[in-house]
Image (cartoon, rainbow, N blue to C red):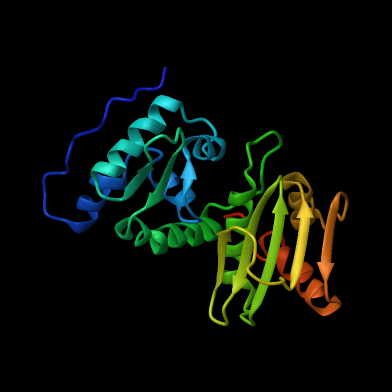
Length: 221
């Protein structure tokens, strides 16, 4: 059984990195923060993304992150669901998560393994990081993904690529409707099976060229 005893050990020396790790260095903590960067989520939403975590461990990590001022819980009286979101201090960890993702692409990258849990949001985050890191294409763009019943936006504001959850406020340049498995097959194999891509031809051609960046440009260490 997985231990859920809170690690209260400190590093007992002055170092801002050590101070930060005392708050977010426990197993799962940074992954909880990663999944809240795209917006508020319920406990069940986080369980769906954090394959392998137990409900007891997730509850404890959320309490610890609340105590540290990194996560806040929206508990509305009379409403059963609790929504968790990042505080400004938690949002400030976004560049840290992005930097870890870039490091992973450069030094710890591999393709998804057969049968390995793969959430649509994590696949899109990795693909977005790869495009931002390696594609050298920063023209404005708005791609709307409809994956497994959820909506995501991959956008470029003219400076960098980003991922958010939700539908676009206006018509996207490209709309992609698929399952996570079908999108994985497109990224790594160029397969169009069970995937629908709509938009103007030039925008669709750009999307097809860039979405495979993770498979064709970034190589295993």
